[in-house]
Image (cartoon, rainbow over the protein chains, first blue to last red):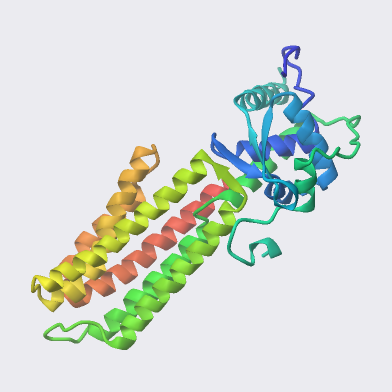
Length: 103
Length: 233
């Protein structure tokens, strides 16, 4: 779960444009809030297939958690950043600042 | 406005959401491209800013609309009572404008909240709904108390003048200030509303409508301008 990243190295799981937008968007929510898959897709403008792929990668890493309710056409999926995901984004942001500052 | 927001009720899940819930595989994505730190910083900032704007519950434009509502609603009442001696209260037309604009305002707030909260769930979202209901209850209690004043034989100047004009600002503004302070946010807007309501009451049952109409308009325009400025900073 986000381990094995050398100091000064950007987390490769977040350092991809689509996933950066996903975690950036989810981080704008207060801790404890969730966003539906459909609204998330609307906010970041990814194709459904791409969003599914990136969400699965983030979920496998423990950065986001998804909760599914209902079945078939009534099924809904809510997505939220986990505490680990927030911590990983904080570390990523700090590393990014250091890189931009020339450290 | 997208089709999903045209009707009330929870947003419909897209086909992709249904497929995701069913465990469908996503499409192959290319991750070989290099992303420069500058570009990453820009992307991250853009995404967060965009999400904050889209999910913000009190957008500055809503503040501007509130300013206009305040000026029109209070101004209409003031125009109908400004020459009354003794004070008897606003005319039917003025009351229709007052309650018409307030109803239009309430509808605008509901539609805005519904759109902004669409797809948002969880603990905090539930708390926000409870907060909204609490403030609505406080607001309604102001008008219930107005009925009690009438029942107790208070003068028209109080029942149809000073109380309905100033009390909403003092009571709801006070509650909003306490709420903001409790969340470590600035209580300034609520406190200024309280001060405006209390101070305007000295203008008497007719003047209070004019003072609050203009004062509230200026206050809300200034607040909206501040929010616009904070967004751009």
